[in-house]
Structure formats: structure tokens, C-alpha cells
Image 1 (cartoon, rainbow, N blue to C red):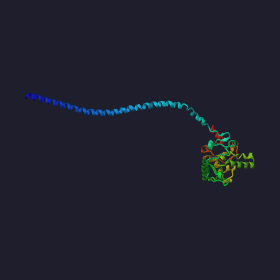
Image 2: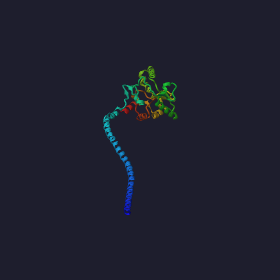
Image 3: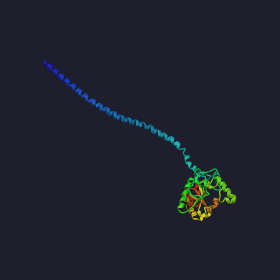
Image 4: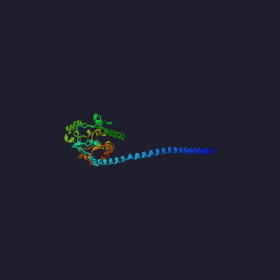
Length: 291
């Protein structure tokens, strides 16, 4: 009875030991699976993003290629763009005998080129300078840019001891009709044409011209102004303010008018300076400028 008992005990012990070993080996396998699963999920997400990203640019890269092809044909008809400078030819000085108003401050008005009878600048303003008493209403007005320029000229002239006053600035077409007819009645048309413009042909209608004189000649419009200190100052300095002495003695045959040291025409500082340096009539300067 004792031997069988010992055998049974040994068998029981063996079975117990085998069972313990099996349970210990199963436990380490569970924690190993968890890190494997979590590590795999993280890297798997990155490739997924990377794969998706290249897949999106691919069509985008193809689209620009197609767009470029579409744009090239649109660029081919651009030769007209190169021809646009041709549409930028020098501005014509006149259009069928009418002044080209697109020239703005450089508009040319003379015996051959006229302004429309209803033309009146939209930006007329009073010139804040001293005028003779006979200059009233609109005849004290100029286009804004010219008004500011004559104000500056008069201010600096006064500071230099030069006494000047305006005698006539803007004139309407209707006023020029009355003025010219009065001169014709007094002196005859041929003589009047030497010092007065027919209606529509007066620079005063542009709002860019002003007559000035000095006390030394009784504020009269006379060629004697040329010999005065004031007249000499004007001849030497008017261009610095954008004005030219429009009708010079040397070019009476070209301009068609007698020498008028009192008649100032605004064309802007740069152009006035060039005219002063080259000493040519305004007509010739414009022709050279537009060539």
C-alpha cells in the first residue's frame, strides 16, 4: 500500500510542476502583442498620409501642364499688344483746323487752329493776384494749374521788388467777338489781326494765358514793357513758373502776331524751360516734340 502511494504522490507533483510552467509562459506573450499592435498603428498612419499626399499633387502637376498649353495659345495673339505703341503716336497738334484738347496744357491755338466756340475749361478758378481795376469777373480767372503758377510768380516778383499786375486772363468766345470787332472797327481788320485774335483763335479762351503789365508803363499793354526792369524780369524768369512770353519779336512772321512782352502762356515748367533754352516759337517746339 505504501509504494503505490509514493508513486501517486510523484505523479501528482509532476503534474503540478507542468501546470505552473505552462501558465508562466503564457503571461509574457500577452504584453509583447500590445506594443506590437500600437507600434504598427503609428507608422502605418504616416505612410498612409504620404501615399495620399503624392496621389493629390500628381493630378495637380498634370493640370498646370495642361493650363500652360491653354495659356500659350492665348499669349500668341499678343502681337496686337506690341502694336499698341503704334497707337501711341505723337499726338496730332490739330484735327481739321480744330485745337487738339487732349494736349491739355500744350494745346495749340493760333490763327490757323481754333477752339470750339462753346469751349470753356472746367477747372477755371480765380487767380489770387493783383489785377487792374478794369479786369473783372471771368477775366480774373485761369485754369487751376495756371492760376497757382501765376500766384507763385507774382509772389516772388513782389519779393524781388518787381511790381506787376494782371490785366486780362480768361476770355469767353463771346467776349472775344466783341473785343475783336471793336478793334476791327477802330483800326481795320488787317491791322487788328496783328495784335488781336479772331474769336475762337485766342489763347485767352484756353484759360492758360494772361496779360500782365507794370506801373512803370501805366499798366498798359505796350512793347515798352520790354525795356523796363519788370519786363526784363519776366523775360528771364517766367519759364521757372511754367510760362513763356508767347509772341517774340524774332518770330512775328511765324506766329502772325506782333511782339507782346506782356502776354504769358502757361505750358508747364519743364516745357517752358525747354522753350526758353531753345528760344523757338511754341509752334515749332510742338512740332519737334510731336515728331
